[in-house]
Amino acid sequence: MGFQQRNSLFIVPLLLLLSNAQAQQHEENFGKSTPSQEQIIDLFKSGEADSEVTPGVKTRGLNIIDSGKSKPKHKPVTPAMEEKAISMEILFDYNSATLTAEAKQQLGPVGMALASDDLKGLNFRIEGHTDAIGSDQYNIDLSRQRAEAVKQFLTEQYGLAGVSIEIVGKGKNDLADKDNPTSEANRRVRIVRLGK
Image 1: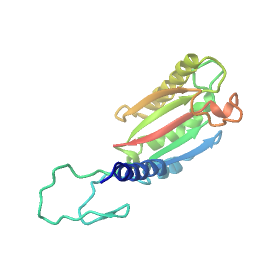
Image 2 (image 1 turned 30 degrees about the vertical axis):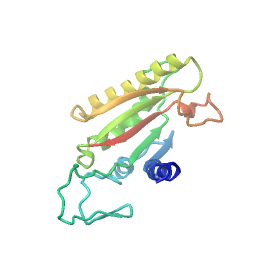
Image 3 (image 1 turned 135 degrees about the vertical axis):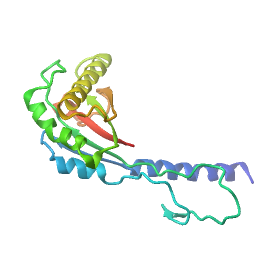
Image 4 (image 1 turned 90 degrees about the vertical axis):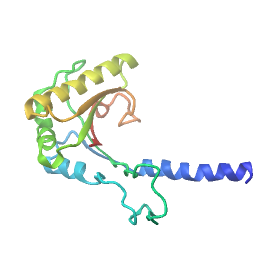
């Protein structure tokens, strides 16, 4: 087998893997509006993949069969969980990580959804985002503080102590409104379902 042929055999599966990874993301941007508890539950519950691939079941066009001739050398494949996220413009006072009364009201349905039995056992990440005003490090720190404020509010108000929630400060990376980097639409919180 020639060098070019071997590289082609490697590149095709890699491209398929990358295209599947990109296809497995879904984000609902609510902007300034407040989603209902049901909307959040429906989004985060859909696409759950918590079972292993069973021999004889077709998965993405592949048919895995057990011929009984050999013992598996590897653990069964667990399908990747589709990344689901909600994005909301949570209002903070300028240069502050303190939640406003309006922000707390916006987060109410989120807290109720995350505390529900429907989402029990799932893990989440809260990402804080800022606009492009200020230095990179300042925005990373501020966005992390804001994500922490959201986590603390949700945990204390909705009894989420048993829910695994990690926080990340994204700063001015991944702007929602790239055409207007100083837009308030970029000052947002994104909540991502990580799986079980």
